[in-house]
Length: 366
Image 1 (cartoon, rainbow, N blue to C red):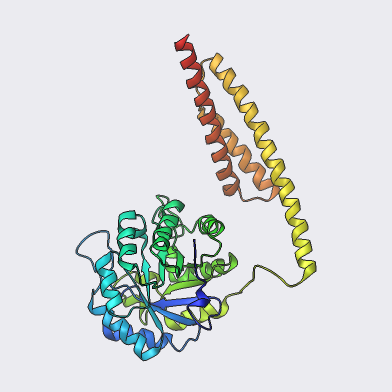
Image 2: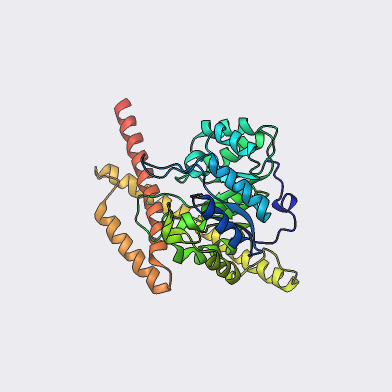
């Protein structure tokens, strides 16, 4: 993919790029008050506000619609901030372009639908307006990449990915699980793609936004999009996850920024040595896994000869307790180790089940 760096289309940009503004544009006064407070913070370069709000159920606030675009245009004229809003179809695109919106973003609910993304891409052909794409609601890296590729094929090269977390059935401390490995994997596939973090949707809690912003910087993301409101408790949507402009300034000021590379040659040499050690250990882990699965196959043969099922719950429970106790003893977080071994055990059961099916098929054929 041909992607243009952010500093090529936002002049004098410093890291992190900060995008801020209310979850929803509510009134002209609310929009302008927020913008005039945010422009006092030199770190804020882009003002965001939702005009069309996709809601799970009807009869809830779904945005002010087209009239909100005029308020964003006024923000742009009076503060000099770039402005961005979410679009979900070709009609939204047409209206946003008509009102000189600088940047568009595609929301998580739209990213999941290739037809909707393609409709937006077709509507944007010939414009090359910057477009930011949020990850899909559920964990699906291919859908996220596919949305970006559709826009790129339409001739758009000012693209940005937004990491806003993923919906899961599990109850956790996050509104949407960050699952940092997914945006890291996206960066591995598309190294030139800028990625920013949306800590508001990840946390759902203004008190945790600073922590997630720092994590985003630690994994070398390019910026953050933080929902900001002059009176968060009175917000018409997502009140719990919005911060005041003053709180935002404090969060950004507190960030500890790191770089991917160091000019210190000793550092690079030491880092290379340590990574070589990790590479050797990783090789040993792979070889050990192969030895483990060789034994799994032998266990599978033994089970087949004795008509025993592949999955044995008591054995799984005992193994997880043993693994958890060992993890604690050596100083590893037991939840992390148990997660790894659940995957290993699932693969073991899958292998033995396939062996059983093959055995029964051969027996039937003979």
